[in-house]
Structures are given as structure tokens and as C-alpha cells.
Length: 163
Image 1: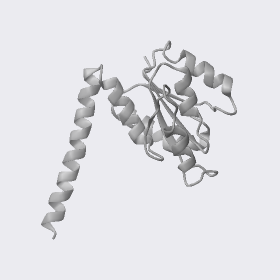
Image 2: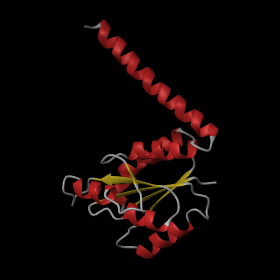
Image 3: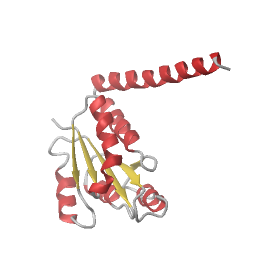
Image 4: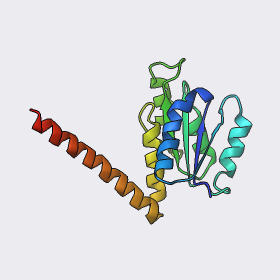
């Protein structure tokens, strides 16, 4: 069963959103990925959001640039947690328009927001949400974070030897 839906406003968002897919693959979490534009295909967006939980999804990762309405609109129509990925696009104001469009949601419509172009962190956050009720995924996240720690310690050790 597919657990995470990765959606984006356009194909130009794919390089950033692929980072979400890559980390979910690494952690062994099933996902789907598609384009769902809040502005160009609102009917598709509504259908996707309303049916996502019925299809077994547990989390939606939504990336968008510019005005970046997709994550917030998705959060308004689905009962699932939504992780928003602000993307610096060609028509962006240094990404701030995307960040603020996703971050500044009204009360009652939360969107967990990662850093600008933070596709990888969005995948890790989605995995952590699933790990809250799935010990296998939780163990994978613990191991992943352990490898991050080990990498930093190895780097520090090498640096200290060469000083």
C-alpha cells in the first residue's frame, strides 16, 4: 500500500521533489509522485486531496514555487498531514513568496513547512510521521540518524588529526 503522496505544482519542481522520493526509497517507504496544480488543475487537486486518505495514504508532501498555494489548499481539503516544500522557481522573489505562502496558514489549516528547496527534509519528516505508528519505519529513521552522527564524528576526527 502506498503511504506517501508526493505532489508538485509543475514538472519544473521535480528536481527538488525527487529528493523526497529518494529518501523515502532509502527508508523503504512506498510513495507515489505526480503533478497537481492548484491553479491550472483545481479539480484534479480537489479529487486528489479528498480521496488520498481513502486510498491509504498517510502523509502528503506538496511542493510548489511562486505563490505556492498547493500545500495549503491540499491541507484545507484532506484530513492527512501535509508537508509543504517551498521551491525557488524562475518567477520567485528569492523563494520568499513560496516560503510565506506555505508557512503563513490560517488557524485550523496547518502545513508542516520545511526549508526552501527542502525536499529531502520533507521526505524525512513524512517518514517520521509514519514512524510514530510503525516501529519498522521508526527503526530505519533511528539508524539513518545514527549514520548522520557517525559521519560527523568521522569528519571531526579526521579534521582534528590534520590540524
